[in-house]
Length: 499
Image 1 (cartoon, helix red, strand yellow):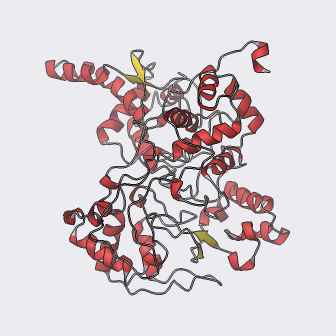
Image 2 (cartoon, helix red, strand yellow; image 1 turned 180 degrees about the vertical axis):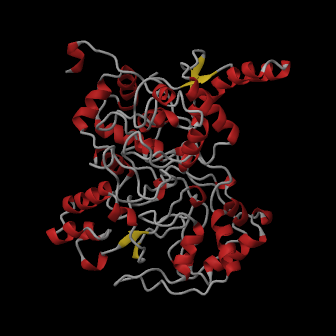
Image 3 (tube, one colour; image 1 turned 135 degrees about the vertical axis):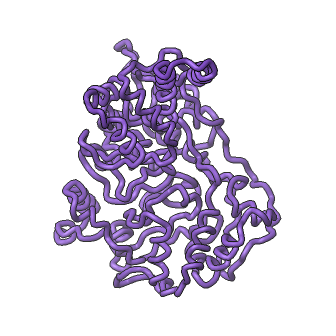
């Protein structure tokens, strides 16, 4: 089960059986392979395997646990759809809101059957690799609103690519494999995927991110969508590039908790990786610096397609791309609501850092794992004893600069793809766009050095609804997702080849 498998014949078999009207029991048997196929497409294999425990339990263990429980199907459907805490360990399960009732039924049916995975299968394939192009396609904007002194929200250009890490298809393909490989973590199970799930907007769908097993993160897991366009990464802008961000996430104590020497040695015992690193980087053995470069190259392909974004089509001349409500929201965004003051430029973010007075997430003060992490993070960031011992708030940029004026400052997030990337704010405090707009309509929260840009807005109920419709029009009409690729297995090597 080291490889993720998908059925060649599952769908065809289902169609044939349905067409010949065989018994219900035979139909049920035929849907089991489809359930397995849906599991692969839903990224379940990032946390589970059939016969071995990863971040979550092995599927065969789930089948055994629920073998005598007649309510098991309903329980599992609810668990898969809604996610949340369970009794299998400290890591909450991510929700899967995009699965249909039929897909959920088939998934649960395969899990509870206890059957081995189908044998006639092919590896999951991701979408074709699309490398950035330059220069960007010239666009004559027709319906663009411009505000003096602010960069307009135009189409995203091709993401910038550093000169020392040029992008090639083989490098991106290698980075995609590494991104989903749990062996780039301390426990060998916590891949980048765990906190950046394609099915959950390339975040993890929770308020406070789940973090490394046995811990809990202290901030919201930001989406990777369009992250290639940021000049700095993380909520406090503490990382200078996707390359350094990948390293920080994989080796951080509440992220991947990996030791680079161990991670590098693991890669050297995977022949497919040794060959791929040699082909991409020209080195005899995988190196961790190259690992982060490959992952960053893959992440630079996770960008919005303007042809699928209603707002981008509208400003390029497609009058019908935005509804009347969205167009009213667009005017509010640039006018009365004042959102454009911080959310400007192609990314819909000025990438600056502000104090908003966002309330602290109560989970940080009520969950022991979160309390531990909150104090640990402040301690390693050099805070004085009275600060990390209290750990009553997240000081944001202050950890980087140590300047009092920066307490509580966090970077303006992009508004692109926010339809798929909730919860919102640095601590996931708001689960809906309605809550976000209510917060800004009230003039933000309470904070000593709150940004003067925040003021009560006096928005009507219709204004708020129009704003939401416009904000959602900044996202693609279909989310960018992909299945988890198969992870190549370890292979014992001759002694001299590991030197």
